[in-house]
Each structure stands twice: as C-alpha cells, then as structure tokens.
Amino acid sequence: MQVEVTFEGDKISSVRMLQQPNHPQTTAAVPKLIQETLQAQSADIDAVSGATITSDGYVTSLQAALDAKG
Amino acid sequence: MRRVEQVMGFPVSLRIDDESASEQTADPVFAWLREVDARFSPFRADSEVSRLDRGELTPHELSPDLTEVLGLCEEYRVATGGAFDVRLPGRGLDPCAMVKGWSVQRAANLLSGRGTSRFCLNAGGDVVAAGGPWRVGVRHPERADRLCTVLEITDGAVATSARYERGDHILDGRTGRPATGLLSITVVAPSLTAADATATAAFAMGAEGVEWAASREGCEVFAVDAERRVLRTAGLPVAG
Image (cartoon, rainbow over all chains, first blue to last red; front, side, top):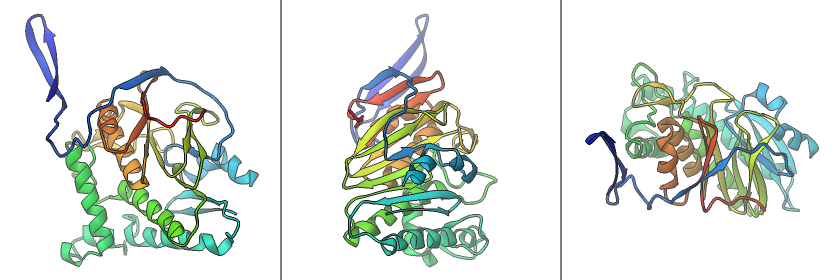
C-alpha cells in the first residue's frame, strides 16, 4: 500500500491512501501521470468528444460542422 | 453514409464508411437508442426505471438489461467510495450516467454484429469507433470552437465529462454537492461502457479522480484540473 503523509511541523496532519493493491477497486498499478499545459488547437478530425451536448449547444458545435460537411 | 438524430436528449451522429452501407444499416442503432430512452429514462413516468423507483417493480421483476445496468452502477459506486451514486438522498433513481455509455456501446455492437466494420458513432460527445484509424478531437473546456488534444482511435471508445454544457450536473455522491475539482476529464477505453462510467465517476471524485481513472484497467486519461493543468497517462493515443 502506498500512502501520502502530510506533516504540520513534526505532527502528521493527514494520511491519504494512494494505492491498495489487493483491494477490488484497484485493477492496475497507478501509472505516472504526465503534466502538460492546456492547448487550444484546431485540426482535421472525424469526431469530437466533449461533455454531453445539448441540442442548442450542438447547433454551433464542431461536431455539427463535421456532420454538415458530409 | 452519415445520419444525425436527436435521441435521449442529445444529438447522435453516425458515420459508416463500409461501401456496402445503406440507410437501413443505421436503422437498428437509432431504433435501439429510442427503445433505451423509453425503457430507462427517469423522465418518463412509464419507464422501467420510473416504475422501479416508485416501488411498482421488485428487483427480481427487472429486465436482464436493467439488472445489468444497476449492477454496473453498484460496481462503480463501490469503486469510487460512493462518489458515483445513482441513488442520491432526496432524489429519484437516475442511472442515466451509466445507461448512456452502456447503450451506445450496445448500439455499436449491433453494427459490428451485422458485419459493419468501419464506423464512428458519436452520442452527444461520447464516441465509439471501429475499423479506424479515426481522429477524435477533445473539445477545449473553455472554447467550444477549439480542441485541446486529438486522439487516434482504431477500435475503442472516448468519453468526456465536464461542466461546460450542462453546468453543475454531476454531483459527488459523498457530499451531495456539485463536483468542481476538474474542468474536464476524457477517458479512452476498449468499450464506451467503461470509458463513460469511468469519466463520469472520476469527474464526481474531483482532482483525485484523475489518478483513480488512470488506475482502471484498460483506461487512458486526459484531464484538465481547476487550475487548467493538463494531466494525462503516458499511454494516451495522441494523434501524430
């Protein structure tokens, strides 16, 4: 088990479990995450993934533009 | 061929590139999704979900499909320590977050099972693709006309959870309050059932959900936290 321990002075203020290998909720080791800066780009694509869109949102969406292109 | 229809409250776009595909090829997909809406919508008083919620059905009277969906909901509730919960206190049973990914994956299976091999099905922002490579853009969380990354998917699914379309609609079941720790999270998985449930559950968990999603088998993650930092897994299939 991996834990993250936070100290305040020499006292432990919190302990957080990061990984519990034999627990059913953990199906694989936690991979190391890569940190990047947020980019805004446009590109040639086939589909757009995003938060569940409303019909109003769809009208002006990139996916609607793709669908209209045919 | 391409077709777009509004089903279950969102637009569903289907593109099939098989040369033999006709309008009829797409029919079972939309028929199934309309059936799912009738059976599982909590907004329809006569749906199986509404009848269960009113106590008119007992658990052993449920259809195998709803039993399967509720079983998946319970699996994710336990796996997230209660952050993902379709039975929040003071609210009706609402399994929509699970029904969407599960039913759209089943729709894709209908196409594959009938011999369709090259298609891209986008259900309101959740994508199942087969016979790629397909280039799937991830919407920028703050700019509707921009992407924040582009993924290359051959056979698999991409789902995104965020607040920019429907506001604070995802609640952290542990607190009952809107989840605000992330701007958006995108999960790539072999099936949309896993991708959508993992993305929604991780969003409900907040910042800690990123690491949790990354630990789920078969899942690759691209997340933007509240400070606009991007966190992603090394195996994310970013398009070249």
